[in-house]
Image 1 (cartoon, rainbow, N blue to C red):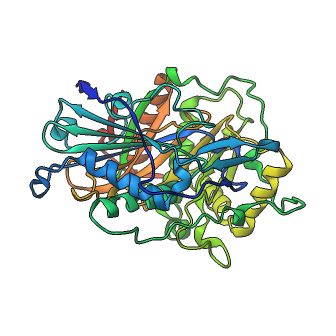
Image 2 (image 1 turned 135 degrees about the horizontal axis):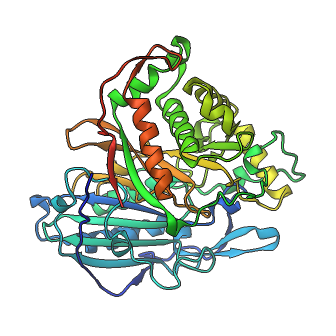
Length: 466
């Protein structure tokens, strides 16, 4: 399958700091003990594509968005500050009001040039979300970088880079939605932002009540952490037909009780492990499922809370078991890992962080999946309608690159709704991964991975690569 990469040039104005449009409190605000763990100390890129709207003729999207950001920062003023590190690696926001970085740009490309199927990896991403020198540090740097690129067709691209210690996906979408509402003329955001990070702080005497194998420190004896510059990036599409085929591989009871997330996560974990060709069948491989805990507290976290409120529950299996046993084995492990997450679990994580020096989650022989299909990125509207694509700009991002994938809502070129998953692997492993996924999707099964029939040798699920 041959791909001709899209190339275009981007002309950027000088970066500027956009400060709150009116005075905001000058104070020091503590992040939670979930926010400041080592595994969230990185920048995460998001990208949104918008069509030209004749009704908005004469309005400059960059100017509209810049003005709305300034007004939104009055409500979300901590984002205009800078992170400082205190004793015991505790992170605090110094609410200086300095502002966020903003870039206005133009590109000699039309939205239609990207093709019918907009999905990661995006061409020229480094030009659409320019890394301003000195801006990507976690400490003492802007907490947001936003670039609005006007396209020659009248559409535009909104790209954003977030310091992940400040917010998770629901929190970021809440901020972006507020910017959209103000851009469309609302006097204030419909959801009042709530800080309340103390709700996710450790107990005075930290005492974790769960084992938290997601934070086990595992030596990288076989060099399984792969340099990012030796990675291939591809996106895989899973529509109703693909999910149905995977579901048909499960026993009837598991087929009924498993969510799309359970099945797809298990499929990807198993296929990725096979593709990496582990040398020792007794080595442990991990899948970390990011689980939003907002609705799992009693009482729930307050509406408007925009901090990190998710857990990293982990399932562990030996390479031999994972690769040789049916898909149902991996599905059961994923379901069990997810089921343990509660408000008490996340408070236990906070205790574990403080007691153990805020460690990074385990990355050796680990795969991380995050489902943002319901986060609402695509619904953000700055006045030009909903995004054609909205969500993570690429897979593999993180404090340790290459271990994470996102589940992103997507409509393919045939108009079929489904999930697109950006994957990041070394090129030989990526080829094996694609074949393994194909094998899982090209046959109907009777519930124990026993082949009934199958005659499809195509790869309709493979969307793009670089």
